[in-house]
Length: 565
Image (cartoon, rainbow, N blue to C red; front, top):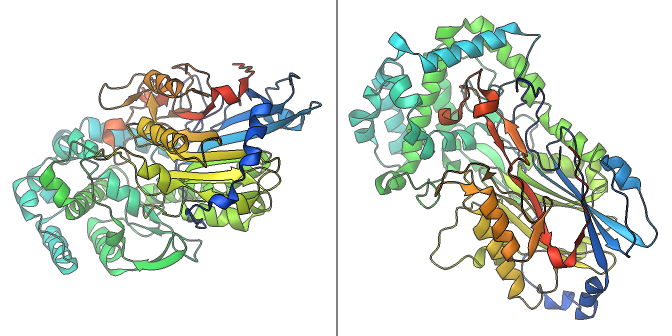
């Protein structure tokens, strides 16, 4: 199947073997984004116009990567191979090729339970997940009030922590709302809590925190990450949860700096501009409010697991899954990049963690690639990264222009992007061809994708220095086959958008709705239950969408595409 795929599909018949999209984290070297126009010699600009560029997309079976080859050279046609390694080794007289890979490596989540998997060696996994599904779909008498799990005493202790750190009081939300909600029907399955990100946002940031100078991340005490200590009771959980969030500072890489932060300090305000369902009042107090919701959520999970299974059964099962799915994710991902896609000239990665960047720079990939991350790294530790072949590109000619792109957003328009989502650089290859190379991770609904593309185009069009550069743009566009109008980005509208700018993509001018690049199905053990799929509906209700793209200027590339199913 062709290019850009994010999670790994396995069993096509029953859509069962869906491997999780779990976590990775990264920081990177900062690149000065101030311009020095003397670095650009206009005498070389016209070299590109004198060449014909042939673009060839091929399909990588069961891959989660977008991989494309550009050919720069004569009229000579180059035979397209369905095997990327064979194609990489092919050569044609008078031509040269540019290999491009784009991959969202999903760096931010270490939840071993998040996605449905096939685990034949452990039949207790399927039994447990069926029980969790039944508990949340048919709670019956188990649908008790929140206050019976997250107790009044727990709330008072949490409110005291809020007062110490200077946060606003959220007692009215507890007293008038949350404590009397039913745990399943009115809290866990409340769609507004999902759309407001009051649970998923704090989970995303504090689920797994990479600690500077350590191979072992810090994990929030919860069921849905690699936390390995005892969760056999809510009292044990609560003691350790408070300690983690408010009393244990961690050394964190932020850009080139190391800072000591408590996990609560890493939380980000939830903005209405990005999540319009949140009210103005909730936006003002979104830090303590999301912390309260995360505490209630974690308390319910611990209670549920110990109700459905013996701690001596589910906790060892979790540890085994963590070892197999999570702890080896960074080494496995690096191995894939090195041994399968290491012959690429350009690699754009999304949702990259600081620890992954650090590992990449200390490993064999650094012998072949300049590994470039944005100057303004994300506290939430998901960043867009660009890797440039050292054989083709000169690092001294690489300049970050991310801020120029951000400055091109229309005045007064709130574009839902966060630090680390955009990474844009200029680069010059050894032939003197100049590029603007962009890696971008779109928001969940894809609403930032077109505005960011427009900003990149605007930046290049109105900069005398960049006007004659060639754009290579690898992105997780988060587009949808059947988008909800006004709330999600339709893939066909996205295609029409880039064609207007004389761009095309690895899928051609018109993206096919069934060019799926994401194939996964969430379980009920994760913070966005509105996205959970029943065990019998993994394919029908899973996230199966055409989300990932490589786009480039059509006039500067001749497309010779061979797509095989």
